[in-house]
Image (cartoon, rainbow, N blue to C red; front, side, top):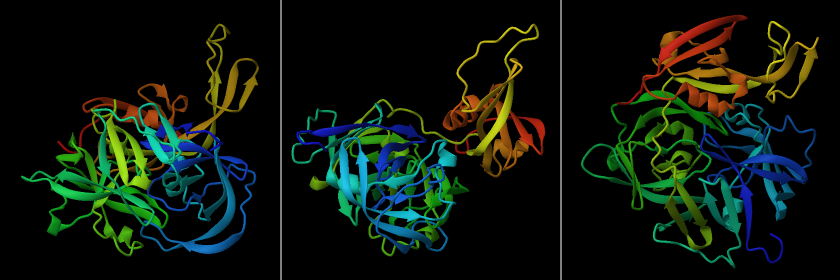
Length: 419
């Protein structure tokens, strides 16, 4: 930070419970996922950048979560990272060369990398999820102003990762104490490691699912819900949970006393102050605290799949120009003053849960989504479309999709997986 500054304020985007912040790397303006579960920053998905200079490069093998083998990557020293007036001119980073490692299609905006520990260790990091603002405070001048609604909890820092203790209630008589990785890079609520000796058994009501992609491949497991979860004195009823297949964690030599992870769908319900230097985190409930936990009621997962052209008529039958709102596309061709050809994002069905309403209605992976309940999807952000598909139990959803150059209409009723 510049001399005399006590903190640096940075606005972020919150997409699917994930924090996306602007970062300049050697002068190139990029977007990074703030991931408290990652050590050294990692760059990937640079296809939309003409060129990015990285310094002092050596080839390495990178191993992370997932069921695959280590991938080829680059290690680079002496890079300049800037976030507003925060600057580090000797930053180490890794570059992943696998094009399949790309968060952008599932989030709907370009994301070029992940960054975490290097920010958390150097600053007191205040995350205001409700205002979508982060303040990076100078630890030497930071003077906390905590009120009666703030609660201070111990933070365990080991191997560049932070852990917090909580309690999970699986439906029997007692709460089970758990130590969880604080993972702002996870959009889920809780991941738990199956452990019969500790009482962490998978609930009877669950289903097999794809949980996400790690640096070493796909992560699969079982999705379910738990009766309750307590962090400090704050209790949450019925949060989502997932039990990942432990083969995905084969790269981690020793999980120690870790029992899982706490992700963005719970963290966003608090405003938090992480102080690694004092091994503490301060939490305060915010306006998201009482929001119901989001469940995928339709069974559909979506992703961006490049761009496509659409033709929009600008005049009615009498030749009168209709109201012309700002187009979502970034390319427009006007033909005879009557039709506009626009380039818009293409949204496709990336996966479907077996036995879900969408699956039973006949939707298929790869279907191109055109309309939801009469609304053209290209006018909305990806997460807005997803919310339209999962609004509430009992709602009928009508979809128009394109399959093999044919437009097809599907209809189904949303229903909960777990009652």
